Length: 332
Image (cartoon, rainbow, N blue to C red; front, side):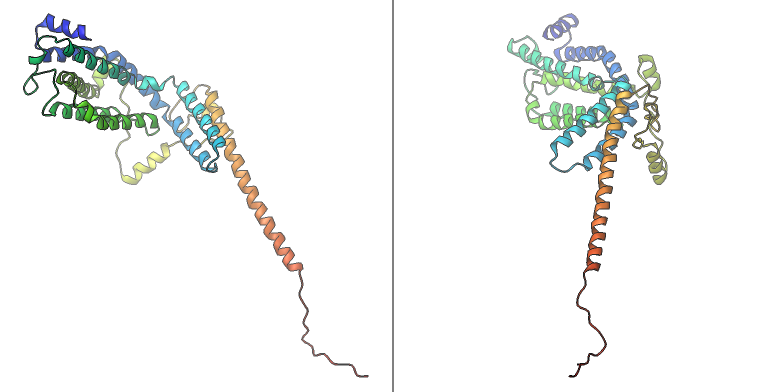
């Protein structure tokens, strides 16, 4: 990274801040194939959403029937749920790592750039002390006004918010990832604000490029030219009750035990091809539900039987008999 920056600055003759900006833009453009790969993975993950919602409903019902502290039953339920999730992802040929491919690549690059910038400061690369702009003329020192850290943290936070805005409600893992990344940004603000201004030039340029890319890819023509999948169609905003009822109609219900693998995708718009693993996972959960219902019914019938037996015993017990007729003594 240090060699790339120095080559760019020597070749173009630009000031250091401009060399960092050009290098960052070139790198982000080179990442477009990875971004496209991630977009296709997210599209396939959205198709698996209805199946994941079915699994979420099933595991919620099953965990409700487990006694608190029953670690063995809870572990078994989680293993079954994990098997179902893995099967749903395999059916649609998607992996969770592919859905976050772009951040996974950008984070190591950011760390590499920060380390390269620190190395350039330690080796006293000429021009860095005066290669900045406006109030951050010295790229080897932290921003004294803290304007660059605030801009970078705010723009990155919004990038995460926009990038994960269209997640399906079943994609709880990605929502968890987004929330924790945003929390990490806030908690790490005191440390990140001490970084050299040169790092923030790279960070802010990369973040603003992310904003531009996000809004450009909302255009169907741009997506088609770059080979991105179509944008997911959001449900039209209607009346309050109508919108709620339409959403409830689209929500898949827990399939019965006798459901065939081909019928597991009904109601969610997903066309499945022999999802045997998913069928087994759902049937295992459903069997537990059936056994639980049978136990509850048996317990209820046992209590009713005990109640009837108690009433019968009470009726058999007899107390002293009192007559209403007067008694007379027999004389001698």
